[in-house]
Image (cartoon, rainbow, N blue to C red):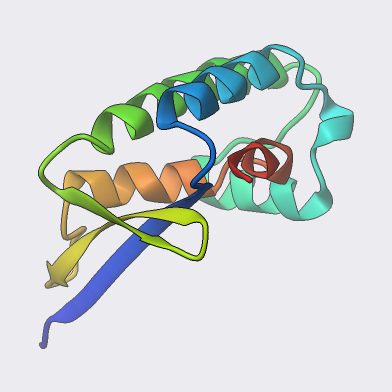
Length: 125
């Protein structure tokens, strides 16, 4: 069994600071309704979190989303992550060699963040 190199990224418009984006994402979570989720969003959330979004599960998903946002923005400052800028975007990266597991703790966090609905990702720029 061989090893694989895995990486994940989060891309933010360079004109926005990470703290402003974090604040905007958390504020948007407070106003989420079921109408904000596309069918693709719902499928990704079911696959990633095992949550079928309904009126009854939305509040719990919002709480979980806010926790993921907080964890992600903490991870951006850890030694498992780096960034580069390219054509007006700041690209946060994490990853490494994998033998069937996640290469870093931040890799799993990035994966959860990237499974959040598109309406949140629009805030990134």
